[in-house]
Length: 396
Image (tube, helix red, strand yellow):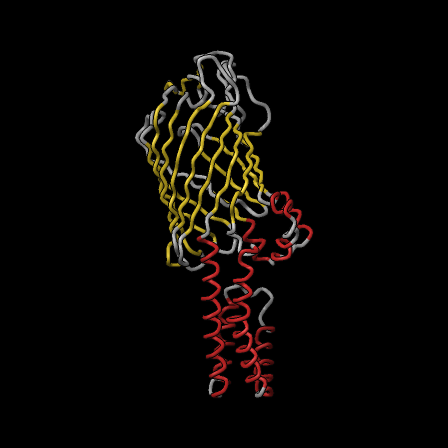
């Protein structure tokens, strides 16, 4: 399932799997956006880099285009008895994605008025409440300075090899000490109460803007070039000798739509076609056409030190017009020549590693076509994705 959004800077994915239990391969995919990477080099701030060329149409059009390259780090194109010509190098494919319509980025000009309004209302009110709080503290400046000095001494006195787990307990003691010293002052009680209420209102208003950005539609067009390969360990016999596996091209239209609400689901639809890059006698160019639908549901409860999990349900129908590999072959004694319909259902749980930009997906897949699997087995695949954009935003 292709998603509508592409990394603003760079994305890195590692796929690990195979056709059958013993046929295994590893593919590394690197995706990036050249224009946005240059903007980030010119201005390393999260907001500043996005604003570069914001009013230049050419830069805006080019920034919607991203590229990717995939490399097979395990094996080149497999062959049996020189039936197929072996591929050279580890390059396994490339792709390009263009965002026809996408306003999901909160830095987009579409949301500038919303952020200005937030700053002039809840933001300004929060700033005033903070000023009132600091003024209330400063009116008791001598007492505050004495308290601040004592707490600073406690923190400084911590050993250099103090563990990260020790710092939260020290900070909790500092907060408790602040309450013991200042909470009995009525004006400070009111200032703290107003300030904490202001924070809650600001966060609520901010979430409203983020919710609006999330529910907007995304429309993208993806082109993928795939160099077909078979694991070198596979026992492959071709029906038509001396023919190289044809490369594949795929064009996918992606429609993505979110729903209102902080934990609202997101719906993604794909429609695509795949064709062979070369012609052959008795074979058409169009290999397949497919349509797929996926629903991503963020789970409401956040797990401590992990984050919010996402549960996904997806289904795909694929219509094969030609043999999937481009000619009839046998793999481990099984003939791969069937055309017709293929239905696939998958459910997936994505587990984030909090603060790292890493997500661990665990999935279960069912298909109506299992002619390559002779054993009665249940297999699990675990993948890792790195979201460098989230780390870039957090560091700035």
